[in-house]
Image 1 (cartoon, rainbow, N blue to C red):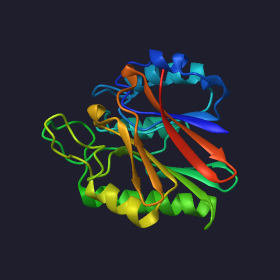
Image 2: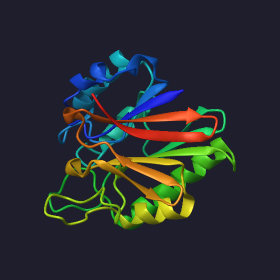
Image 3: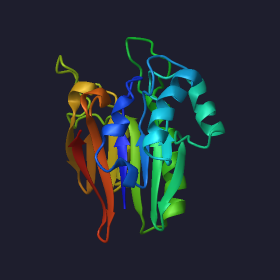
Amino acid sequence: MYWIVVGDVHESAEGFARIPGVAGAAGIIISGDLTNKGGPAEADRVLAQALAANPNVLAQVGNMDEPRVTAHLATRGLNLHREARLLAPGTAVLGVGYSTITPFHTPSEAAEDDIAAWLAEAHAKARALAGPDGHVLAVIHNAPFGTGLGRISSGMDVGSAAVLEYLRREQPDVCVCGHIHEARGEARLDRCHVLNPGLFAEGGYARVELTPAGLTASLEHF
């Protein structure tokens, strides 16, 4: 059983149909930035192409989506922001969207304290679903600070300290993040495997698989 996790779609959704094995996946998970400062109508156009590729989709807002997209996704039964879902017996996914504060005044930004609280809230829901010895996939729009996955082209690290603290403390099996397109890559925080697939329009995605040993993940390209 495996899932396709993508981020930073920015309304360039044609790639969903090009992902190898997408129809056979247990689902598609979108980590944020479906649109370019868009609302429900723009999000729906992205979701239509994702749902055409696979009928099981979860999604959450990134900083470039209007906050009202969260309620719209919830109405459609697809929202992951501040929520958790059972993926399989003993395995859950949690989501936290938005980003930390940027200089660009994008639609959905939040303070580190808010992101920390949302992570704690979503993790508690995921752990309740998965059980104390279960597996957790964390899908977080903002990359963690200090891993290289939030480093912009100037070299500055704009990753989130709250995300880093959460991953170190709770140790989900896998975390798929995004937000910084040029920081595609992966890192390890003790047992937690962290991946940033990069910009979806450039073919980046992550494949997360449930094996007898737990969740594993890999960076992929179509």
